[in-house]
Image (tube, rainbow, N blue to C red; front, side):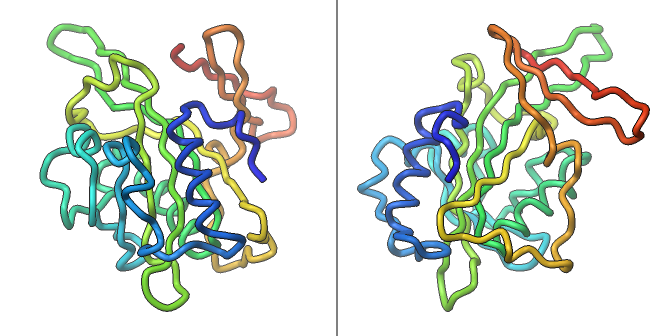
Length: 227
């Protein structure tokens, strides 16, 4: 089971614990088993997606803070459209794996603010943590996703609709107890190696992602994260 220490925000930890309790050892709980009254203040940062096909994950419900972050008119919008162009295909693979295998996804990202070419300045990205949890709505297929997006810094909570969408920084696979990785099949696309295999290294307030180089002669690549 995923160590609790890997969650950066206590709200993420709380939602995962609740989902896991309701799941009760099954592959995923049912949508109607998730009781809003039990989520309390987490509801503001929570949303539910419906998977209609491999590349479409529509918003069905969204908390107030999620709507402020991503735009007030979310209903029936594809969640993948919230991400920058470079990350959409990669995130589509993550969501497909969550839906098809029953694992959980834990992501670190930021609101994407591109360089201001007029002034030469750049607004710092607004970091957040996102967890995506599988749900069953009808039958035994996972066709709903319970998600929570929570800013990691106070200034990030004030961001309204990052102009260039969301940017993916790191991703982790969580395999809850009773969900077997043996379910992996050749039909499931491999995740982008730089994200899937990223090793998070923290030193003081700075955070780094370490990637293994593609050739045997290459040293690992180290990329600094914002504190």
